[in-house]
Amino acid sequence: MPQHPIDRGGIAPAVVAWFAHAARPLPWRAADVSPWAVLVSEFMLQQTQVGRVQPRWEEWVRRWPTPAALAAEPASEAVRAWDRLGYPRRALWLHRAATEIVERHGGEVPRDLDALLALQGIGPYTARAIAAFAFGDRHPVVDTNTRRVIARAVDGAAESGPPATARDLAAMERLLPPDREAAHRFNAGAMELGATVCTARAPRCDACPIADLCAWRAAGYPAYEGPRRARQTRFEGSDRQARGKVMRELRAAHRAVAGDELARVLDDPARLERAIEGLVADGLAVRTSDGYVLPEV
DNA sequence: CTCCAGCCTC
DNA sequence: GAGGCAGGAG
Image 1 (cartoon, rainbow, N blue to C red):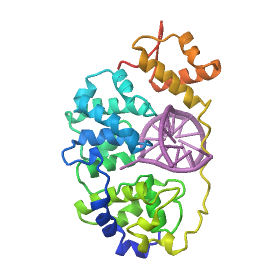
Image 2 (cartoon, chains in turn blue, cyan, yellow; image 1 turned 90 degrees about the vertical axis):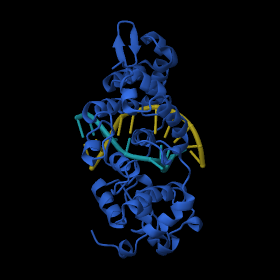
Image 3 (spheres, rainbow, N blue to C red; image 1 turned 135 degrees about the horizontal axis):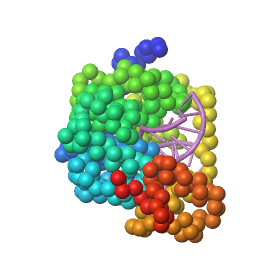
Image 4 (tube, rainbow, N blue to C red; image 1 turned 60 degrees about the horizontal axis):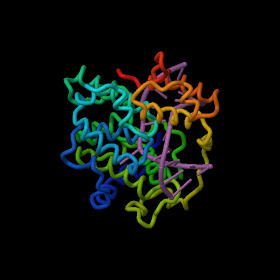
């Protein structure tokens, strides 16, 4: 991996300076937010935009201010409170992570990267995000926004291509300021820049704090050359949508829902069957003698 | 249509 | 490494 000249001068100072005034006032960035509340935000933000997360997050941290509070309730309550954020396995994983934190860490969110990675539902991004944003430790944090910022500003490419975790972490590490606090701000600022200025569809280069350092701009905005991302399959009429419809019924019911009742909200029997089987396999639905319920454990 | 603070399983 | 996983917004 060649060293890019820009790595040494760095985009970090300009991004940090910009972030100081451009940061959105997101509630999980407040100074008095607990590591647990940051952890909850990071689970919710996996593949889900800020605007949809904010109300659910407020409700969650008010209702379950500690891992122990969540772990004390059945998983069904977590799945209900997840509401329609999507990917409801995350609610189950978050409930399990809370239980693991109580069992392994005395109810305190661990600060160690490997301990975080060992928790259910926490991968390379989320572990570093918690260590960096909740504890202020110096780790490279790379989400889809930061990947795009690096691809453009450093590599001069419109897109980063398929995610490659080791490569992306190394690239961010090269850009990361040595100072802990500066590293924290650069991690957050790079994500913010990608989310609000250096966006995928219509980057606002006129508002970009590193436009004069950007390799993509300098190269004349060359189009992306790499492999096309697979086209996302249609949601309407999909198995995913069917799962969502079943989950909506189970969340609302507070009792067992019979298969016949589910057939009323989904007219494709084969699709309904696949959805139910998938949800049971994922632990999001439990088969009882009367029908299906949310998991209690 | 594409994109979104990814992770898990195979 | 590829595929599956919700749902909303642009």
